[in-house]
Length: 228
Image (cartoon, rainbow, N blue to C red; front, side, top):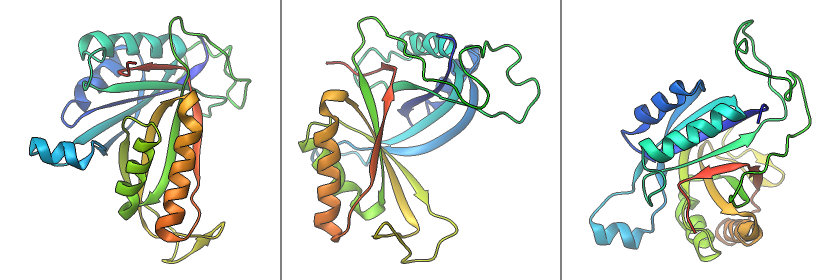
């Protein structure tokens, strides 16, 4: 597990600092802490008298060994093995470029070249194969897109609000009209459920706007916080 991983932890708002401290304890370099929103159905949230659940998204990079140990620490210290306490995942990086001479001095990069390398295939015992689906959508489409994804088998996701820069309102890309206000929808799903969710997302955007959507997925090598 010597190759370098990109790791993310998604927790309730206010618990990001604790997750970040665990990242530090296990030698992950913190890249970013982002505020996001959960995607519990509106019916459930209305029943509980709650607003849309706010989330902290903590991102970092580390060796595969350190990322795995951080996963185990999140499981035990933040009870990720219990439903609703948070989720975490790691993705193997094919290459990395660091503008700091001693940044990787304690890392074994024999399996990950600074410019490029082949993906390391590391099997985790008793783990399912998951993929991360990422979709960039207009903010007003977040509810219908998530509802469609849920009907297609998705159990939940995280929305990260974003703002497009360097473009004019109404610019088109691949025939898709772009606006500045965006949402990034992140969904973890077993590989077997990926295609129905991708299809549901794109069909919903087409139905709602008359335009096509672009969603992409990437393999995840380890997860915590998801059962079943």
